[in-house]
Image (tube, rainbow, N blue to C red; front, side):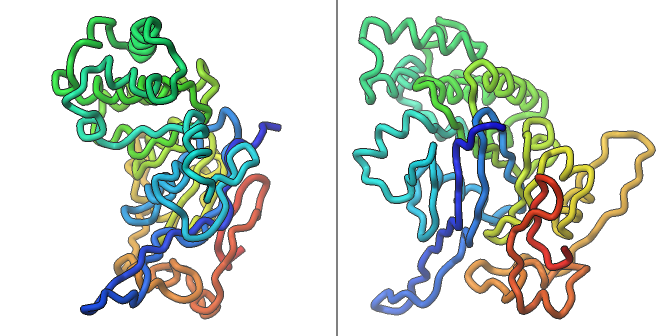
Length: 321
């Protein structure tokens, strides 16, 4: 059995809503509302869901870019949800992030050498004489040339810029990488190259990934397990094979029915959800999905289902089970 690298329990992030001349708090936007999951060493956990469901906010809390309102984030058994900045700085070597847009996440005024060398300089892990050697090694690892280290980000294509971002994330030899829509800004042909590179690096560096995406095909390709989020909650969590073969939550069924089928002569009935996604500032009572669920019954409007295991390794938050 794999060792648990990251354990998230009851994670919440509420953003205050201010109003009036005195800017009093009149409510909260519940961006993430009680999410729990684990990531094992060497595992890729995919997180999917509609825009605004809390995927990116969850990733940013794990990175401690955002402070959680409630909940625990245990990294190798240590709760990092509220540790001081001095201790957090040392831990940041072990978890890094790849952002959606490599153009805005890379400082255009810095050369590639300066961008990749920056983690070494901040943490003092590599001597000045060895920095060039390490930068060249990382560039070669992600499929770029040594000479590229003297160029600036704007001189590269989108795929090449994302390779630079990956090289920078690898600099400190992390154990966990949070990839937030890491390929969504790239052309489809380039997406496959970056995904294959990430899979190769996973095995080469014994990495774990939290891969956030709205693209089901991408998540299916790269993930060992998949978590489905809706309105700030985790509604289903299972192995990739189990979830795509037999989804249990009505929301997951609707998501999969909307995905195009690459196989010829495969006709899949489309599940069309009625109504709009409720506002996270005023989420519905009971099950968050019951206002749009085609299988909802009276109890769904009253009782909020907990995420529980209904089959081996398959968890779902639904009163049907």
